[in-house]
Image 1 (cartoon, rainbow, N blue to C red):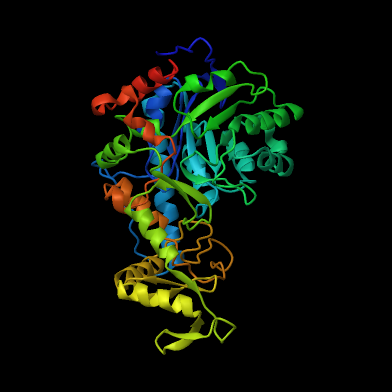
Image 2: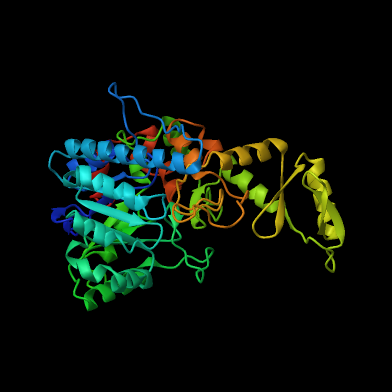
Length: 470
């Protein structure tokens, strides 16, 4: 039986305007753009386009691919910044036009993306009057408030705990509180993409978001931000499930961010194969892992891409450069066959992997060897060579976007080039062989009657549906 809670769903003031309590999740490369963001805003909600490697179009409307001519990482990095900034400006213009003066338009950026500040400033300099707010997570964006205030836009930090927001507030945000548009609480266990799990939180033991959000509200009230809304993100599907959050002084003004459901709309820019895959997901198909080159946990569909990474990490042994206790069995490594010492048990395991075709050993920064096929080793090496600096720090290629441009550590072959796979999947590459980020509730597409017989709604139809509680 449908539960209509629309009478309890109050509009909220976000980025200086009263809107429906619905926010489109920004996500990453190409998964939200100006068309989807503009449609959400046109429906009276908050639309969010991704400022992470945003797409530009040529005069005929064809997407301009992210290709690089530079021979060095720094040269390619500068090309990436130019492409990303131009794409973000173009998506802002599209969103503004599609919104028709309704709702709010936000841009989503990741603090840990390469040259985040430069790209964000470039966007706001050229199209700041078209953007109402900046949503930012994946790190501790202390400078976010200063940049937003300089260009008269609201900022919406993404946090996963009160402690994180308190640190941001005390160090920076208290100086520009008039531009704080909301605090986005992103559930670190249920949200898609990169998650904010701290080192003292168990990825296998999800916590109830209610007390965590109530703690944020208590702190907001203590510093005089009683009217600042909290946006609940991660694990939101039906608003009827959140009825106890509405008109609740422990939570205060609240809106809800939807990441998964907007993917399956007519305006969504993700390819058809991706949309079809969403309808087939089952509970348990989403895998929380730590393979990302950012070092953060992330949630993705457990497809062949993830399984290959899991296997790559499992085929791993420790080694010593000299005989040490049980590490007494020599394993020749490198062009000169220099002996690296492993245990007898691990040597037997290596023999088994090599008999299965995993004959190439690769060193990790942690004093271990992983075993892959010759083809995999060649691809890993090529991807590392082709690095364009899409992250501020990358453990896969040892890139750093400032100072001496290196993390000072060995490149880690247990990870992957994140820009390459995300660009491929959003441009129509196979969903089974690429990273497919997903929230943990995406399996609900299969049983939700709103998507029966493969129905793909418009954004306006989705917003109307959400406002009924379903």
